[in-house]
Amino acid sequence: MNPFTIEEQERMPEHVAIIMDGNGRWAQSKGKPRLFGHRNGVENVRSVVNTARELGIPYVTLYAFSQENQSRPVAEKSGLMKLLEEFLKIELKSMVRDGIRLRAIGDLNGLPEFARKIVLQTIEKTKANQDWNLTLALNYGSRQEVLEAIKSISKSENLDPESLEWDDFSQYLQTRDLPDPDLIVRTSGEFRLSNFLLLQAAYAEIFVSPLHWPDFNRNAFIDSIKDYVHRERRFGKTREQVVSLT
Ligand code: FPP
Image 1 (cartoon, rainbow, N blue to C red):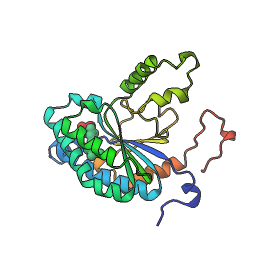
Image 2 (cartoon, helix red, strand yellow):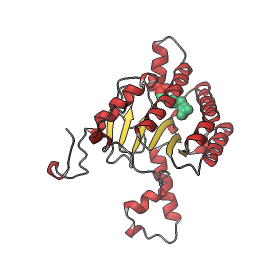
Image 3 (cartoon, protein in one colour):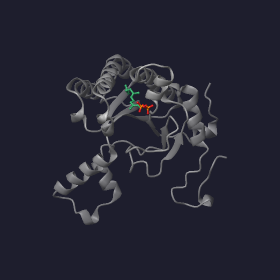
Image 4 (tube, rainbow, N blue to C red):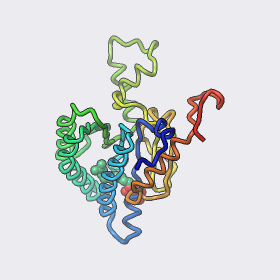
């Protein structure tokens, strides 16, 4: 049964972006190594992706590896990359079957060769899919993305910087074919954006869950969406100008 009323279903987010935090703390609280937390984190990716699809939320973006995560111990980084490889190898079949298109944002050149290869292959094999959209932020940093956009614009000969509008600028971001996120979810109780989609999140609602990512299950995800559909999104307008569901 759909946990949302008809009115709530009309206010579902189109794009939810998630900062999956707390794998390490979750594992440590169980006396296990950090990679145990990441492995369980991947299991949770499956659960949340399935729930989002079931709820009819067409775009989900996951912050899987930030540029700042490059400073983590080598063993943790390579463990994460192997988990990513395993995830994509296992999921390719169901992505093709279910019409899921994979995209990636971030500097893929900073990934180990085996990880970059499987990411690019999966993007290629799913590029015609149109039913659902999963984007992985890999070696991603919002400031770096903006800098790259500015560098490209400055090299572009037929563009007058004086007449540049946001809609033109946003075409130079790696998220150019994604809608802006409506909702940013962060787990583990941290109230930070951590260099994630800073400009794209200009009008996003933010939901922080105290749960560590491996514990942020289907029900917790549904609760975050329930909270979102009752928010009043004003985009700079007055209360009277917007209709809300209270
Ligand atoms: C944050 O927990 C999590 C990460 C840095 C990596 C998230 C990656 C995955 C869930 C696995 C790979 C993803 C896919 C899509 C296959 P943390 O290590 O920062 O936790 P802590 O703050 O408690 O130390």
